[in-house]
Length: 65
Image 1 (cartoon, helix red, strand yellow):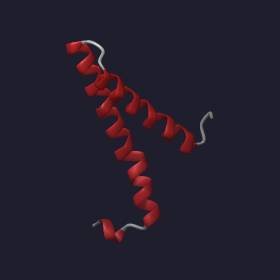
Image 2 (cartoon, one colour):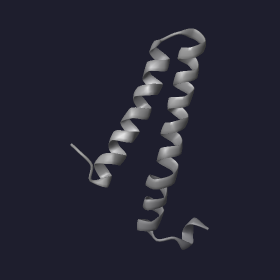
Image 3 (cartoon, rainbow, N blue to C red):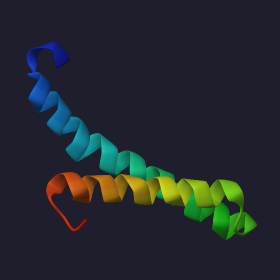
Image 4 (spheres, one colour):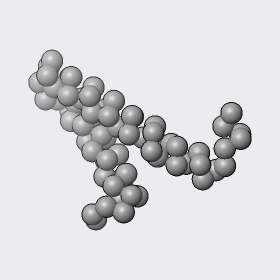
């Protein structure tokens, strides 16, 4: 099915659907770890990964730099 989409459409789908879902999942896992075990290096890294994804999306969307 992916073969029938143009390269630009595939990239748009990845950036608008998969990246937000992935960063939200990372952030949710990080918050769950912090809630269960307290702040740790792994939970902070997961939360930062979620924030990096949001910043990249807002930059690509033309947001504040």
